[in-house]
Image (cartoon, rainbow, N blue to C red; front, side, top):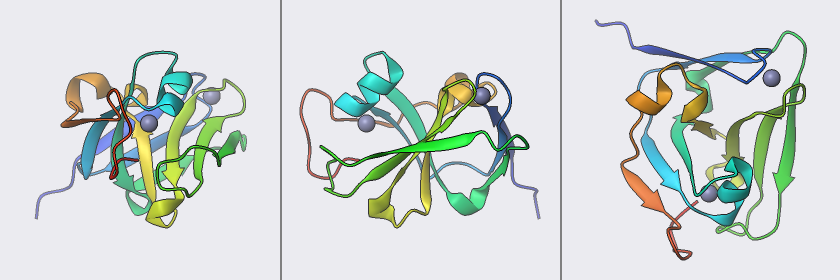
Length: 132
Ligand SMILES: [Zn+2]
Ligand SMILES: [Zn+2]
């Protein structure tokens, strides 16, 4: 059997590193107001991975999170996980998936923006019913 592909990612300061095993379930460009604020840009691109596919190294215990409770599409909170040292967002964990799905920022993955091309755009211009 072929070994699954491994992708490497890290925050801005390198204090938190992680590996992703295999290809993501989905790659999406999200234009929602939360993503726009977080990215400081028009959209954020993320790759959808189950938590079981992510191995995290955080030797300095730098991981922090902020829970977004207002204005989420599902009405359920979502957690924005970030490095407490450099402030870099690593991923979002929407509770609507039971906390088991991480929406990983592709810009933090080695060669991520080149490899992980968005297959869909969500919240472009308006809220839709099935988006994150
Ligand atoms: Zn960092
Ligand atoms: Zn969004």
